[in-house]
Length: 215
Image (tube, rainbow, N blue to C red; front, side, top):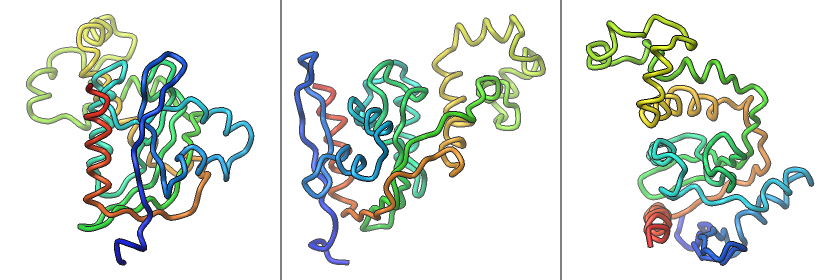
């Protein structure tokens, strides 16, 4: 596929009601939200109005920033691209794209909104430091004689979470949130049109988005 036949991707900034400037994506010269809204129901369109681009470290928790970077690094995954501005993190409205990569190209196969109706807070809580199936040798050395065989209501476990929230949240994101997003049952696909980008330019746009929001 020639570069000229690929889809275009561009990053621009826009001022919002708070006075701050936020980046937004244009796909083939059309704002990404408009792209999605063309294929969405009215209720979904309302949810998209104030979403922010996920390519930033400006999250409420550093664990969420680490999680987004983890998703972007995958060779084929449903990756968050937009999420809710209020309490900017991944329990709010989340738009994902099914993304795969070759050496030269990046494909967005489809775009959807996460359906959180099957989300289990108890299962999420169990997926952090209590999920021993994911333990490394170092984890067993650190936690093996502590609270790992207790339940989510253990006072010792609660104390650990309160003192190590960022690490606990990141484990939950990797072990629970990521798997939840990869399950098609948890995604309402809104746009089935495949988009193809030149990988070098695409990754440059991501880098620019992170740099822009560090200013």
